[in-house]
Length: 382
Image (cartoon, rainbow, N blue to C red; front, side, top):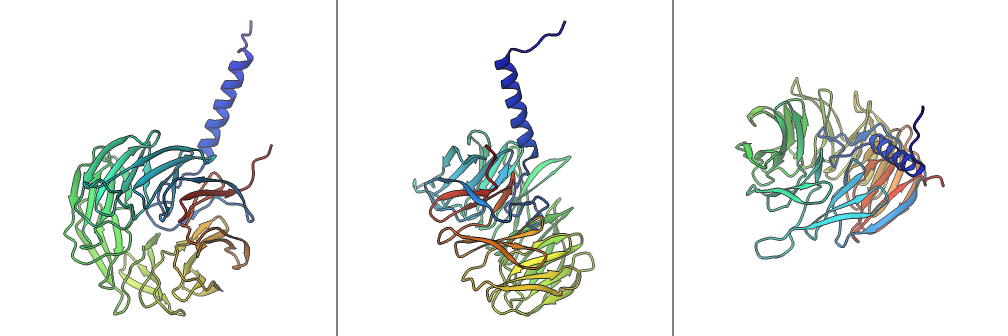
């Protein structure tokens, strides 16, 4: 004899299964550049001509890129809040933070998410761990550091650790994600305005001494440095692909270095002004925004220019590559450009200032200076 589930139960089970499948297929964007290599690249595609799906007001300006995991998007605001919305734009929770004087703190960098936790670091060096589902505080740790760059995380057999750099001194802090305890701190020695990147056992970052630094992820001890020469101060992230690092500098050039041989491989210098945005790196191309307002695409192997667009932007922003398309957020305008030839397929003026995007579930999610979270993508079928 065959036993059938009652219709309401079957419907409920089917709904749960469909939601589970959707969330399992939704790609996570747990870090501001997708992952700790800072390549800002995902194989997932987005519509060439997306439409606004939803917009949600969260109460405070959003200056940092969103992150996303397991069907939820997390944002930090300049009003001292960490915010969570779901894939339909519903505000799930908002957690406010204040300093000892009761004033809202500032989050000068994006959050990072892992498993069922979200981590956010205020610019006065307080690191907070929140439960992703509810926003409940797991723990808070005071680092006594000036933090303007997002933390990064690595999970090994020894557990999950968070890595944060002090802008003023260039010292690194390694924090145990489970309890917020300090595992180690490095000595530092030079002001570091850019974020860190991580590949394997190496933590990589540039500094104001025109050098790319490599330190051990295990204990923070120096491994080596690569000197780039006078005028090549680095304030962007160093995107890591295989054994190569890609970064811009104050002179306006884009440099590729061999991280193992510790030498410069090529330099693209057909630009003016400083280049302080982090380049996006795909399988074979590098895309960056130059100081004089151009968007450039270079061959990853030798730095040959493949195409260039005069964006005439007044700000710098780090591009993102989604499949075969480049996403650019400049002067409040979101643009989509074909990676193959630089042709612009779509653009939308949104606000005075918008953040670089997170890509999740086929959607482009951004924040605005007006305190809105917005999602663009292909409308769902009825």
